Amino acid sequence: MILQRRPIATLLAASFLLVASFAASAADNTLTPSDKAAGWKLLFDGSTTQGWRSFKSPGFPEKGWRVEQGVLFHADKGGGGDIISEGRYQEFDLEWDWRVAPGANSGVKYFILTERGAAIGHEYQMIDDALHADAKTGPLHQTAAFYDVLPPVNPRVKPAGRWNHSRVLVRGNHVEHWLNGSMALQYELGSPEVMEGVARSKFKKVEGFGKSVAGHILLQDHGDEVWFKNIKIRDLKK
Image (cartoon, rainbow, N blue to C red; front, side):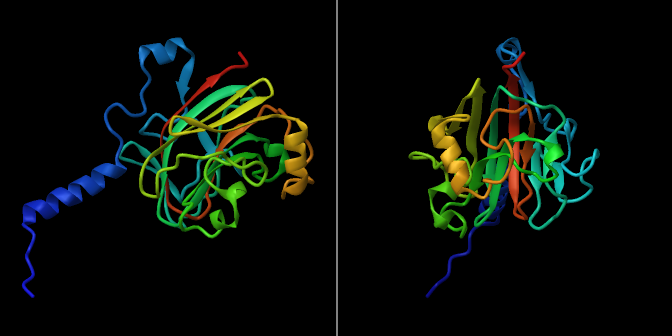
């Protein structure tokens, strides 16, 4: 068998594309004039960790999390713990782009109360549905689920290594989970459906879980590689 050598220029081009796929574009982590007029604000500016802190302490973690090429990145087994927004939100429109490494697990949580002493909140699940063992236990643990409480409906998730776009909308007691432009789940806070789901879940003993509260936004450290960019929010309570 004769093996053909790939030209060095082709290899360099492939390497450049791989690196570029992890980086943010010039248009990322910015707001348009219409965004600003509509009340959107960035929760990640693309270059600093301003606006975020450790769940367990006032400062930002010294390890695990870092900003690189316009992306907020958590390293594989890097430690550092979960991070939360400095602000609290009760009714809001939240959007972000994310990607996980093959076999990885993470999530975005909302209604986080530090008074609970643990990082417990409603979680928008972000996971490699094809490879992670938790996702294989069923839809309650798959991408776009209200983790362990309600499953998504026909989520249009892109595979690990590719960017996904997600949204959580909370208006009054109405909540929506969106994934790549399609609604994957909707529910009413405090409704029988939600409270029955909570009663079957690991959160059944958490006081007030499943109901509306003003809480922090949390990015989860699950010990895996995960990337975030274009994190923006509109406070609908104002």
